[in-house]
Length: 152
Image (cartoon, rainbow, N blue to C red; front, side, top):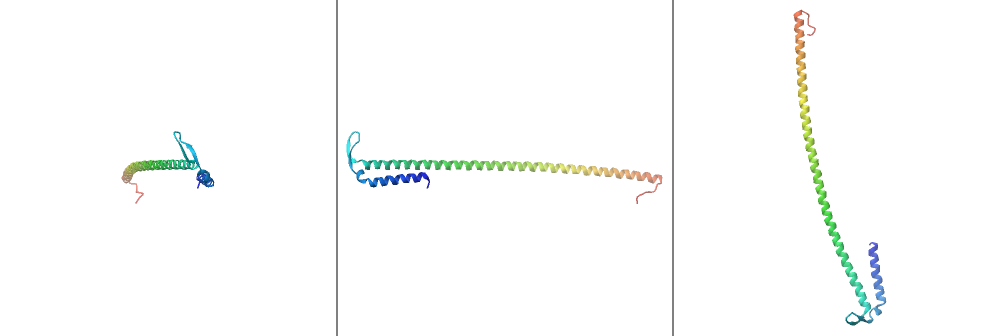
């Protein structure tokens, strides 16, 4: 129980004690002017009734106010949840797009590496063929001149 609730309960208890102690005075009939007529009624009881009625009006007002705040809170929570879901979907979409872009770039990079590998192998093969041809030519010249071969 918070301080406000405790204070309200204390005031109600004090009014109840005051009313119980002065019940005979509260019930004493008095001439009351209602503006256009007069009536004989216990003024204390009427004032006590007005206090109870005013307290009831304030209680109803508080309940309505709390209900409004709770419905507003629920509405804001729903909006927040919807915005969070929208942000999550957008983030997931960006991740998918990034993943797709990364995959495309990787495929391009792998294709480029494969192309360079083929070109390198082709260049090595061309150099090997050129070296073989040059060695064969040197070997033929050596055989024509009559110089013995150094290799087997």
